[in-house]
Length: 92
Image 1 (cartoon, rainbow, N blue to C red):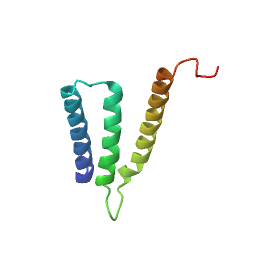
Image 2: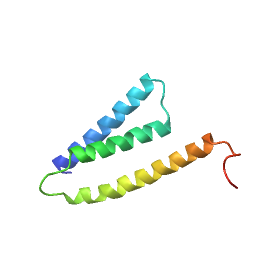
Image 3: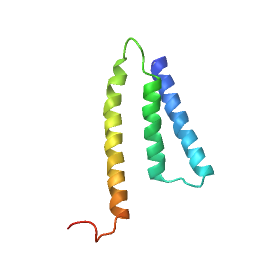
Image 4: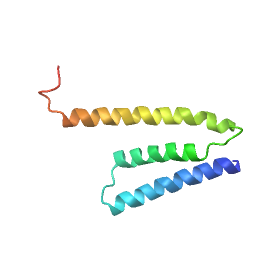
């Protein structure tokens, strides 16, 4: 692993650990909230660690990971909306 990749992984793991700790302290730990906060962390860490001149080859895979995360987020939002909206409102 390169130093930049190590730094990226450490920042992401730190973000995820901090997320778990904050959610536990707030008594709000759930898989959905952890996923959402981790996805936000991935976006933030990706943006903050973007190299200025040359993009390493391993960073070419990050947009795929982000896209999968955003699709999963969209699925969670749709599931939550369908759960909240009464069945009388939804067309059959």
